[in-house]
Amino acid sequence: MIHSKHSQPLVSIIMPTHNANVGFLREAIDSCIAQTYPCWELIIVDDGSTNESPLVIAEQRSRDSRIRSLRHDSKRRLPAALNSGIEQAQGDFLTWLSDDDRFRPLALERMLKFLSEHPQIDIVYADYSLLQSDGTLGERMRVGPAEELGIHKPVGICYLAKYEAFARTGFSEDFFLAEDLDFWIRACMTYKATPLHEDLAQYRQHSGTLTQSHPRTEILLVHRRILDRHLDRMHWLSPPNKVRAYLRLGKQFLAQGAAAPAAAAFGRAAGLGPRACTAALSNLITRKIGQCTQLQRL
View 1 (cartoon, one colour):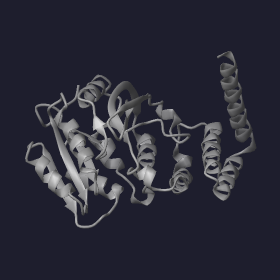
View 2 (spheres, rainbow, N blue to C red):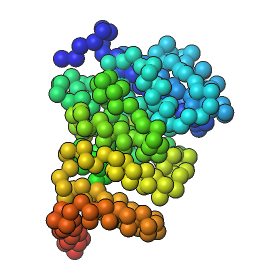
View 3 (cartoon, one colour):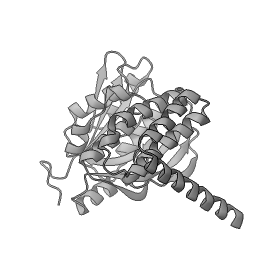
């Protein structure tokens, strides 16, 4: 049973934005207004936009009293914008939505129902579909178990958290470009997260996203700093899986032609212990053999 100071639990949706594609921004806001669960507030955080975004935000705010906004005088980047939204949130549950993505209409209703039925869970995260810039729907993405966090990021763009889990974790400005990975790792140190295999959001792919507008190696270097900082406290990872986390990161650096960071990641893997490194390599080889066997059977 969920208890709330409101007649129904209030869900706070934080939407940071900076010089958004105004068409995408309108669609993102529309997807919040279209929610079948009615007890929500949308907090739009304008991170110093210099295009038409402030006009669109004012226009959308006049449509629905559940929409609020605040503005940074200058650009402070995504983690700071998210934290500003958290400071203004009044909800029992919190989430955030990018200004170019879309919730499906049942998103809040289904995630809130799951948390109500599983009170031991603090954060639920759902499957989602890819969305092309022209609006064409693509592949459905299935999220993975939280126990894989660190080896890769098994969570997606759609989740709902109890206020305490979201607000107390917050977003670190030290890890811009991978603040979401850092958030999830720190949240899972204290709180229980689990997947919900329902397609509840749409992740838009286009050239203006942060991941597309920054070099991949730059993002991977932030991932490396996050692992270095948190690995000892990532209690859900066995020693072989901690090795796997660095081996996988090293392979990603190599794929970008970044030999020095790759060597550093491989060296960190080896330094975690030869026994664990051997076990991780054995697991990698076993999986590769299994994949090759499956391909041969096709």
